[in-house]
Image (cartoon, rainbow over all chains, first blue to last red; front, side):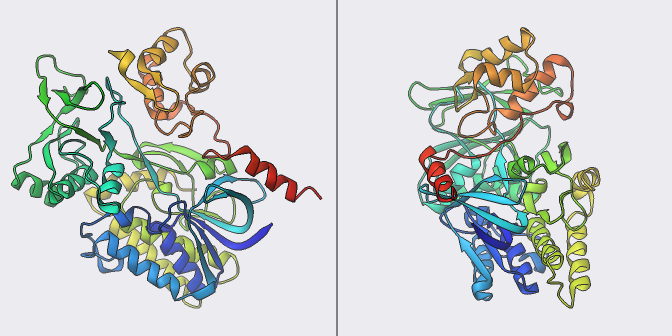
Length: 360
Length: 93
């Protein structure tokens, strides 16, 4: 059985930064990536990031992925990136089973593991929600921004959070009409700067609205929406019809961390972090020594926090393996400071509350 | 219209079926899983999990945080049995 020093599962923003951080401290790293391309969600993100320079503000997500992947190369053989390789099981003796290229299945034993597996999309229940033409926002972004395929001609977006609003704008950039953006909440969740762009282009953003049903025979032909009251119950008589061939569902993400759960890591349902998350220390270590978590797998935030958590987890995992860099303390407090800044202010209030609950 | 609302895409289980089972007293994810196969398909409960827990919470007056999901077991995606058998044979001696 192959043995590795540090196994990182996932090569999104958290996994890539964890690998760079650990390798720069002297650890040998194997990264497993289930896709054919590294970068996770970054490769679909054609918009510019906000925040501070340390998280590549004003760069586009897709360019950040390129920068991080190029950095991996600087560490030569100390970092190996295995593509098309899905971690399918995680066992007591730190053995991880891997399915590669759909045709190879093997075991890897790791001294330490960083789980940076990201998130999955929440779904929505409404009549005829299985009609072709109803997509998650991630699928729409993948079709457009990774493969260059139009998902349809006229889209109704469900969800006015950052993803819903940003994907709506990207659809319009691709020449696709966006009929409207809905959200069941009474206010727009997205940053004002993203929502304003849509509003300026004449796209109505309907708050306190939900999908009542989808209509179509072989594929989506229309969607009926209605207003909801403060308890999110539909208000009769408020129905509106939108003739659309795409309904894009963007109602939030949940942490993807089933590998940690099956390994026996202590988990907790934390609504502020959007689902079940592993309990962890300030250094991103779970209750099982040597098993770390970083990025959305530990609670839904943004790519900038995922990068900072990745750097922190990689640094601390390497130190625990005996590769404490000379500037360990300085780097550790720098990453903690970055995370504190990213989670500051009223926007970070929920995250701060969630972090408190999930702290070991 | 509940019969056209799909809760589990993997096994085509509808909201109507879920609500009927809850009204019969099956008020845990695991019980409904054993009766309908929710959570046992390719997505392993990532589509239906929160939708079913929300239905149970609404019907029983509990909070989702107090409900339990199913035990997570490997593998997280489908693996062909011959691949597992071949890997096991390699380590037999």
